[in-house]
Amino acid sequence: MTIMAQRTIKAGTLTLSLHQNGDRLDELLAFGSRLNPRRGYLFISRVLGKHMPVRPSKMDAIHEELASGITLLGASAYVVGMAETAVGLGAGVARHLSGRYEYSVFHHTTRFQVSDPWLHIREDHSHADTMHMAHLTTSAQDAIKDIQDLVLVDDEISTGKTLAQLASKLISQSALYRVKRLHIVSLVSWLTEAAREELLQQLPKNIDVRFVQLMAGHFHFAPRAGYQPQLPVSVDTDFCNILLRPRDTTLPIESEGLYGKIMTSSKEPPLQGDVLSTHEHQEATVVFGMGEYLDAPFRLALYLERQGHDVMFQSSTRSPIAISDAVKSRIEHEAPGSTGKRHFLYNAPENYLALAFNGIGCPALASQLEENHLRNCALEVTE
Image (tube, rainbow, N blue to C red; front, side, top):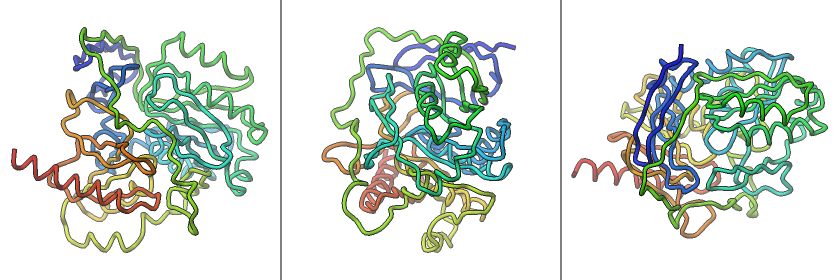
């Protein structure tokens, strides 16, 4: 049954035609307006933990639901999450796959500079025009050499052009010559039949392509006359070079899928034990991931919730969004490795103690986000 819906936002009007699980629209999506002249509308996930705070248990259930819809050809999978929004989603799907199969190797695209990138990807609609993938570690390379299943994970798919580009490049790599099945996984798919056919045309004919999503349909956007957004001068559109700076230690983000991460059914520690000691009290807590560093903070949030704490999770982003529609508030922090650029966090819950983690060895940035959240809460109370 097709469900029709219409949503009016600051940027214009979205008309939706939903042919798969349309009854889940309000569970899965809210809507906003971008500060981006290339694309005015924004589908805001209610379950991703990015632009809206989410219960960790809800996110984990979504990860499990997506993973349960994937039928592997082999006993393991190579899972790639799309930066920055779907890095955490991809890790969650990989984790649940590793519980159902022998293991998974999780990897993600990135907008961090790494030495000698493996692959480059270009997004037409994004304000950050390119991203790339780092080479896998030796152990991760060994783990993918016999894999038959490639799993690409994104939060929502509109045209599929970026995923088709990435899939084509990955499948052509000698390390993945055994891949026979491609799984394209998303929370929501807006692929038209024409777009799906165009995607398939870019892939080898011998690849079995499966689509897994929680909701699917088509949409039409009618822009509002006079809405002419411009990118803020502080928006961060560049690669971040902070990982190339000299140092003696491995940064946390480097162990979470940037260079590949082998996942098995063995449980991982949530985060450092000293962090947990700060939560012996019962104060409501929001855990903030920052940028591409999502999965480890999420695991901490999920652990705390399972211990009985009142916990929410979300993360900061490069994306500039108008304060309107489903976006009610914004706090900012300095972009790592740059002067004058900013990252943003939207709809942070009031009256929640914030714990922020960036995974790149910049505790001052995490403290800045925590302090700005506290300041924003104070302003909300005053107003």
